[in-house]
Image (cartoon, rainbow, N blue to C red; front, side, top):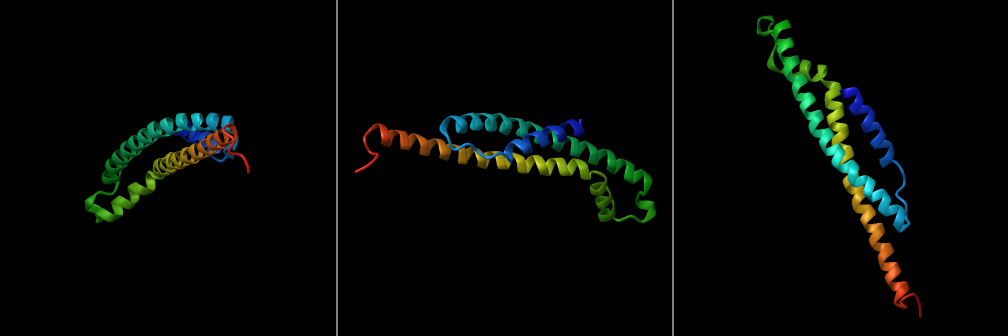
Length: 131
């Protein structure tokens, strides 16, 4: 499951690296895709957090069995071992969190492009285009 999520995150990442079109139709189309990806990355982020939680729980149990308190392992050492073992899950959570945020900012920028284009059309349609 984590591999599929990473592949999908990479596809979304590539989309967010495209330039946002400055024409109104292209911006609207791009914004529509961003809206879809915003919803999708939100769900993926929740799923990745669950994967991370499940991995941590399993790793804690395994670590306690392997090292346990009898071996003199401190709570911090056990915590560091668990974090290290769950690094892929944490990476996915962090990545999806940043993607989700990036998409939100790109949607705001896309709205600005559309608003600018609408204002320019209104000015041109109502004779505000010159002196």
